Image (tube, rainbow, N blue to C red; front, side, top):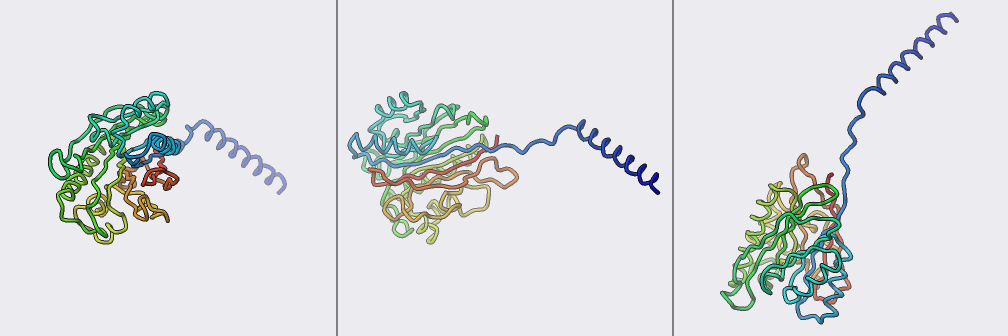
Length: 291
């Protein structure tokens, strides 16, 4: 019995050694793809602020994010150009004051610029009348750490277009409806080239819009349909206690959410950025993107 037992132990040891050797010779299992984080923000900086207050808000939102959509900044275009050059940011603020108002900035250390463009949507109350014309601006970046393309689309819809989620029957409302549809069309077009983020002051409250569900406002145009589609920070992660304009949540960060098997970028959370001099708070969303 002792000889048999000793032989069995030696045999088992030899088998274990062989298994270890074979395992060592096999190629290692591929590691799970790493996810790299970055932050995207939006802030409407009221155009009537003093220069000092404007700089305060610009530096505040820039300190929270890697890519930012700004609103109402067209009258500060020249300053933004100097600020971006001196602080390592890309700036896209095309055309005159109205078109440049929806500026996009991104850290040069995080992104390269691949392409950019601007779409004229409509005149809110007619050509040359106040409020002025609306544009949707966009930049397609290369995220350096992953090589992924990320298109950021930025917009500012005119105010006074809804009451408790219900549309006001005004020319400006019809302009905003056209702008929302163009934003969706841009997002659909750009998602074929990579990942998509949409940001801006849309002047429609999230909870009121979702509750009423007007067909041409952001909830129905962007979010109510099945995937793939846009999804906002409020839809994915709930409304924070503080609003972005008083108690209303009218400033958004969206991303193009795909079916799970095709998703390469995720919004993992967001914060509302208070302490601004503007009449708006900012929104900063955290993303992870697969390398």
